[in-house]
Image (cartoon, rainbow, N blue to C red):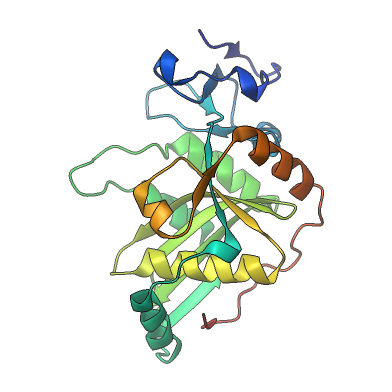
Length: 238
């Protein structure tokens, strides 16, 4: 059993999250709300919301935790070539924080045969609230002034928590991620949280670390000064 939280309930210790033997590894609690205060406290303690439409809010703290050390980012030859092509083409632009809600809603759109989404309207509103406070950010890829790809996440101190990406043209999400990684690296952010293990993330250089190691880093990085200027120099070169 996991605890049910009301709006005034504190989170349980992340170490009490369910394990694989329980059938829902990483599930920590349910309930509460998606207020900015709740979300910020959650991220600072290695906890994130993840639930489908119609479910209660579910809170997770996975062990191990998939993370990308930005210095380990693997830039494939094909992506490097793509970035160079885009850098020479004035039709393409990469921006930060000019269409945050649009990026979220694009990430929430059904993909292929999978018509479901975990990015509910409550999630959109919760993270838009964080964006207005300067904690949630979007990386956007534009082609002929049309939004064709992007990614969004949360940044607290010098720690970035990735949430989701989308692409409407080939490689657009990869271009967004690459520019985000370059930007974070230039601003002293060493780790990007990817939450859960996947083969795709591993191919980009992400690795699984223990929850204890993750929480130690988060505790340190969250105390560092926040990035003050989320502007991107267009056509950053790899």
